Image (cartoon, rainbow over all chains, first blue to last red):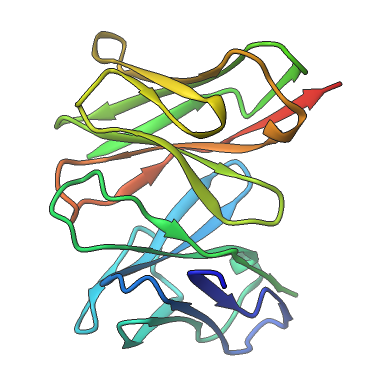
Amino acid sequence: DADVTQTPRNRITKTGKRIMLECSQTKGHDRMYWYRQDPGLGLRLIYYSFDVKDINKGEISDGYSVSRQAQAKFSLSLESAIPNQTALYFCATSDRGQGGDNEQFFGPGTRLTVL
Amino acid sequence: AQSVTQLGSHVSVSEGALVLLRCNYSSSVPPYLFWYVQYPNQGLQLLLKYTSAATLVKGINGFEAEFKKSETSFHLTKPSAHMSDAAEYFCAVRGETSGSRLTFGEGTQLTVNP
């Protein structure tokens, strides 16, 4: 079984709809992240959480919110989806280590299309 | 603040040829540098990382990268391309603490021609 899972894998929705993307992990990591990937822009950080009570904005948090329901679960919500939020969304996890060399482990991604 | 620039959004090589994917970084502190690979319809997977222990870093699938501080570069190479290497490759940089953000480059799509 995959260590980091994302649901749904694909979603098509309409402008103005509320959407939730879910991420679960079995790696036992404290830290979880949400990124979006757009062609030619690489991955950009939306939100990150270092533990259940610690949630931080990333570089592109406007229009998004998150919920860390448990150590293993981190959800991303689009309160009112708009077409420029069409992208590939990735969840990632990492452990607590002190150094900057901590590897992040990625889920398979959710492809979201907003019409 | 740190950033990375990947030179060339698309690279095409023949099977068996040298693969060279370029990455230059900017960082105000000694950086940690990473190369990730994304195969079609999959998430990112770590290829290798530079952690200051050695300037030449060997990764999975025959890839390696050399950290050159004087050139602020961390280029990824593989002596002989295989068809299975076709994927998108991302260079990423991070500051010295685990609390610092991982910043990704724009990505390079590698095509391997038979």
